Image (cartoon, rainbow, N blue to C red; front, side):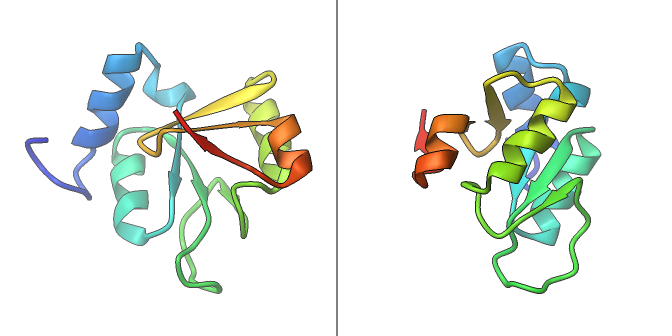
Length: 106
């Protein structure tokens, strides 16, 4: 990357490599620096804070990526059974959320 976070380079590169539209992509983040990077790239931001109770900008806020509410929120964005996370390399699906595994590396 030319510039580290909070520059959006990581997200712009990942979206470009995946052929994903920035405005339809979701970044999973846990810090203000990462959130700033995702916002600068025009992505939605799902946040599970590193420090519970931290006040962070977000489109979705939770305590775990296994939270079924995350999948409901992703569905509202237009994701069907899976929602890919640009930058984090995770996929979530309803079965994983229901059984508590919540995520798998791609």
